[in-house]
Length: 117
Length: 411
Image: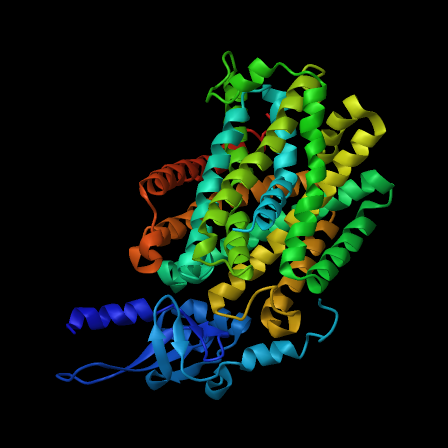
């Protein structure tokens, strides 16, 4: 793989939706965690999910607003947990194992469980 | 392809095509400019058919709705701007539809408008909560078919068919003053916006995924988009033509949504009026549901939440909370006492400004073989798609100046 295609991989990963091993949507690739040093290959370590990961991608003045509206929660998805990357990133484990289901769970406390056909 | 399912899908699309903005602008266009704006309805209908078919195809081929892929294409920053603009546009549209339904109920029952708005918000929320997606779509769409009374009423008043046919030819009426020409221009932009509302493609593509469309449904998608929206558009054209025949010569300006219903009362009396109002009620109520769900779909898809009404409300909690809050926000806008017609004007204006941002990512996605494989845009879809994108971009640029110069089409 050439350096160009590595960079392309990252740019194409960003903003893709995530689905866990149970087929549930569980966030978007908001940023990525890379590891490396001068002279060595850059390695993709994890996907970062949640408004806390917007920091590198939004202007500084916008972050307090993002924090106010959406909070600053961020979950880390180790690259080993990624099964496939296409129009969606499919994960190898359930969202709850990676802490990706907390916001849905919090919202779920407000929703009664009756009345729908 | 199941013929019954296909017929139901087409009928649902026909009944669900007309909303409050089309009702208002079709009636006003006919009254002010006779048959000269029919071509804009026909032209815009081809546009919404092209983009709806495209969004359905993207949903089938990439198995992703428009907003999921839109963010990937536009990136976080620009994506957030488009999301915010589309939320505002859809919210105002939803408030206009809710206000419109309350007004129609007010005509039908004489009960206070504000009370009807609150009642309808509750009824619509309960209906989305209780009913599965297909039922929601079918009930409002099929009962909206009462609107066919407008087409029957047009036939009954023996209109000049040759002049109606002539209206399908693109034209600008002769002898208009500069002021009238600007108003005509504003109507052209407003009709394009009303027919091609962004919520329609969000709802259509998400609906395709809700119904589990697969590659074998590609033909269903195409036929539903072409026939359903094409025939639905004929209802709007019937309202315009009746208005040109009945209101124009009498110098009646159909300023309120209820005026259109009088078109059915003239040939058919009280029952014509009631059927027209019922058709308008279900069509506009359906549009209120669609705008609200389309908004919730967009937000949920943008942030990667669990979404969809094919799930029980508690299985997609953030999505559920979102559509409930959006309905409450739409009701709050209506309860401020702002005039429904003003909401319609704002909805039209905001929507046309958002339209290019809605359709550009869709065009790029549908033309991208990596996502679409063999279902990538062909030459016809590509040509029509870019042609309409150029038209809506020009309309978006012209919208605000025309709105200001014509005081929202009021001269």
